Image (cartoon, rainbow, N blue to C red; front, side, top):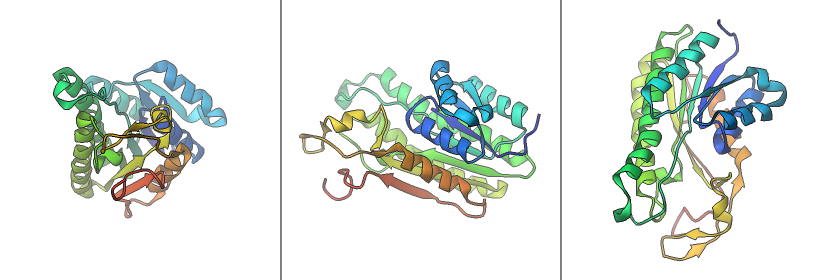
Length: 252
C-alpha cells in the first residue's frame, strides 16, 4: 500500500518530546509511525492525536535490537511505501552516580539505545530513502544540550550525545549523494516528565543543587516541525533550543 501524504517515523514516541513531536507532525499532515518500547504508551499517544489518529501507526520497537528496527521500517514501507522523515529521539540515561561506580551493563544500556539505536535507524532510513521515488528524505537526531556540556555524574549519556554529533555530521555528508538531509536538534530543559526534577533542584557543576527554568515542550515540537518543513535542498544542520535562563551559556 502506498500513500500520497508525507510519512515520518518518531522513536521514543510514547512520552515527552517524542510524543509532542509526533502530535505536531500529525497536525501538519504527516502519517506518523510511533516507535517505542511500551505499547501502552504508544496507544496513549494515538489517543492524544484526536482527529489525526487515523494517520498514526503504533509500532512497538526496541531501537537497540537490529531485528526490531528492521521490522519497524519494513512495516512503514509496507503501509506507506516511502519514508520522508526520521526523528531519532529515543534515549535513556544511567543512574546519577559517580563515574567509577557505574557498571559496564549500565554503560552498555545507554550506548545501545542512545547511539547504536540511532545508527541502526539511520541505516534503515538510508536504505529506504535512497531507493524510493522521489528519492531522498530527512533525518533529525535529538542530540540534547549534553552534546555540548555534561551535567555532573552523566558520563554515559553525555558520551553518547557527543557521539550523536559525529554521527549526524557523517550522515549529513554520506547522505548528500542520495538527497538525504541529516540534522541535529539540541534541547535544553523542555518541560516533560523526564525533566520535572529540574523544577525541584538538580546538582550543578559547583556542587550546589539549584532549581532550573523549564520551557514548554511545544516549542521543541514546533522547532522540529520547522526543520522538517524545509525542502531537501535546505537544511538546519544544528539547532539549539533551550529554556532561556537555564545554566548552560557562560558559567551558570
